[in-house]
Image 1 (cartoon, one colour):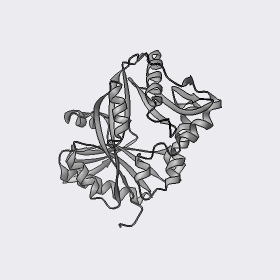
Image 2 (cartoon, rainbow, N blue to C red):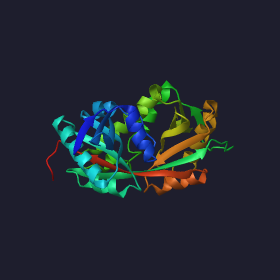
Image 3 (spheres, rainbow, N blue to C red):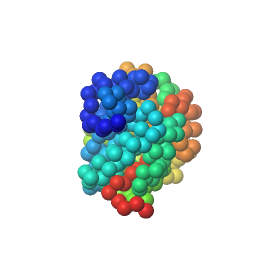
Image 4 (cartoon, helix red, strand yellow):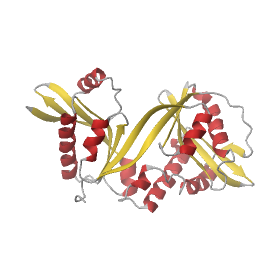
Length: 287
């Protein structure tokens, strides 16, 4: 007989994931499926407060989902969907490892589930490139915030937010504008801007996060792609990240963003993991 339990003891969840060879992620809440006293499956999730405030919607981010069988995972997600619908959640973001075909099938069968893209995580040792940029690259300050925020609009149209038919193009634009602004106002550990004849033509923002340095946002003004701005911006922030003494730098891009993948590979990055992204809208009637 199965039963559900919320917020089971963390050590029990970690032991279950460890047995499955899964590295646990930070989370706020959990929904667990038990058979007698044995843990059979778990969903780890958190409220996405920043996105919720920006979109004026109640958004949940599923950090990890695992079970001993596809049937158990299906039951767990069905119960999670029903609970989130009752709680008034607008949409749920779910990230599934690309190799987990069973989990993808389960999520795709949920009502109002939309496949909204993919992510390829690439990693590289922190290194020095000794590049000579054709633009001026300087550490961005408060005076650069508005130019950087404007440049972020329309720069990330391959991302999942633009692929969701229930989110407007303008709301996705606003998200990246505010994302870049939030980074510029203190979230980013490092940020640099590329200027040409006094105009901001690109920027990069990075985070010192855990045991690695993360390339968080990077954009180049249309018309300047293919001229080395992206390479030199990334190279510069990676070199400057040496101050944090990380051994690894990571970047993420969509699996279909061939130009970005080729850039990172040219810089010595290697593919590390890939994921499929879904948005599920439990508050909507099934299409």
